[in-house]
Structure formats: C-alpha cells, structure tokens
Image: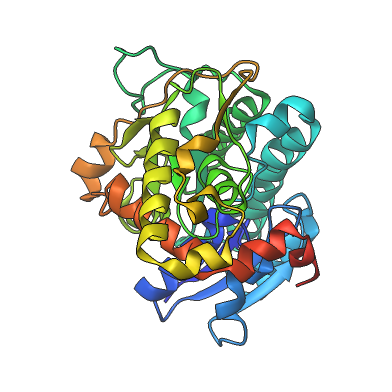
Amino acid sequence: MSNLLVTGAAGFIGSNFIHYWHRSNPDDKILALDALTYAGNKANLGACEGASWYSFVKGSVCDQELIESLLREHDIDTLVHFAAESHVDRSITGPDAFIETNIVGTHTLLKAAKKVWLDENVKANHLFHHVSTDEVYGTLDADDPAFSESTSYAPNSPYAASKAASDHLVRSYHHTFGLKATTSNCSNNYGPHHFPEKLIPLCLLNILNGKPLPIYGDGKQIRDWLYVDDHARGIELIIKQGRHGETYNIGGNNEWANIDVVTLLCSIVDTRFSNDQALSERFSNSPCANATPASSLITYVKDRPGHDTRYAINAKKIMSELGYKPQEDFDSGLNKTVDWYLNNEYWWQAILDGSYRDY
C-alpha cells in the first residue's frame, strides 16, 4: 500500500489521475493538495469526498512548512506533482505567476522532499514524480522527427520556459542529492473536467452557446492529442516500473491540426443534435438547434505571439520499456469527451457563471 501526495489535485489532469489511480489501486491512500486558483475546481473531486482513502488540503506548493508537515503526518512515500500554471496565453500576458508556481513551487517541493525523505529519517522507498509538457522541446517543422527524450530543450513561451526550468531542477535533485525522481513529458491532454479556456472545451461550449470558434492564424498548428486517462495510465507505469532519474515521453499517437480538431468536434456535435431533439431545446442558441452546421461558427483570429507550429511525441521509450500503449484513438476519446460535457452541464455552467469558486 502506498500513500500519495498529489499536487494540483483539483485541476484537470490531477483530478482525473486521482480517479484513475483509485480505480487501479483501491488500497492506496491519496492526499490531494491544491491552492484552488482559477483552474482548480474542488467539484472535480466531489465523488471522493468522505472516502476513507482520500483527504484534501487547500494550500500552495510554495509553502515549504506545509509540504513538510504533510509528508510527515501522512507518511507520504510518493509525490505526484501536477500543480502548474499551464495556459500559454496567460503566460504571455502575466508570466510572473508561472515563474512562482512552476519554478519556485517545484523547488519548494523538492526541498521539502529532500528534508523529510533524506535528511531527517531516510525513507528508502520514496518517489518524486514530476509531470511536465512536450512544450519544453520547442517546435517542429512538418517533416521533423517527433520529440524524443534526447531532444534538446528549446522553450518558446514563458510557460514552456518555466516548465523546462522545473524539469532541470528535478533532474538536479536526483543526481546531486540522490532523491528518487522521475519525469514525464506529455502531449496535449483532453477529456472530462477540462477547464473551458483550452481549445476543445472552449469550442464545444461555444458551439452549444452559439458563440464564435476562434482559430489562431490559419489553424494548421499541429498537436499530438492524449486522452487524459491514457496519460494517467502512463504515469502509473512510470511510478511502478520506471527507472529513477529517467524522463519518459507520454503521447497519444494522434497528430492533428487545430482546424481539423475543431472540424471533427463540429461534426460530432452536429450528429448529437440530429440524433437527440432534446439538445435543441436545451441549447437553443446553438446553430445546431436550427440544423445549421456547427462549423458555421469557425472564425479565424490573429495568431498569438510565438505560436509553435507543431508538437509531436515519440513515445517509443515508455512503450518498449514499460509496455505503455494508449487505449483511446482520437475519434473515440473525443466522442467520450463530448458526451461527458453534454451529460455534466451543471459542472461547466458553474465555471461559466463563477459559482464553482464557492464549492
């Protein structure tokens, strides 16, 4: 049995990881930590409340005294670090928060883990797993090989630079102090509980509300899309079988141009409306309610500064070493995602009207 501390636990990927981990490891105990900033939504973990295996603490990864006390009091042996500012647009307009959370916060966690696990009472069976992004590698041209673990770092946004710095800090604490640590760099995640500022949930909710679907530039920027449960599955393999000090890329083997993602999303929503008349009544502002294609809302807008052209993940290392294989293709995963949002209107309406902050 393990005792996990999960940071960024109320966010999109962190909360999905907690649900996945409990299904896969029901005897383990999980301590969820989140500062509940704008993207942290405690409702994401509502199904866990009151369970004997789960507890929640509101707090910051920059609070070393708090982290140390949690590691001691809950006898934590595995720290899974999701907490991060992650929206590129926000990093352009307000980079300070990214430096504070992603760099200072990660270093604070590392200092606390070193002190409790190595300096005070040596805990031989410990692990610090750091969750990072493929954006640290920079951008690819259309014919370039996909990012591998040996690709040089070349971050192009304040967000990516802050995550690159955190990756280096984790590596340094392993090699300098002997902290048992692993890092995963993932491609773009999607799935349930995705905060509605990101491409897929933003466009889905805009379709339902009859609002424009903003596409940066020509929309031909390419991303590799990873269903969030496949990401959690990859992290589980790394925690249980990965080599300490190593980095593993986790990808979905799903390269799609942004405009093609939105076009597929529009097609799926069109089909849902044509098959379920009740949707037209629930979402009367949607063009789909009047049999107008959702794609009519596509609107091209000025590209953002430093917009990377293509991300692609080479996941051969985790596949060959740990037996990882994504279980969702993009069509099946996106259909699941659309159905989840249609069946959980209360969740995203609370975000749109701000009431989720009162949960």
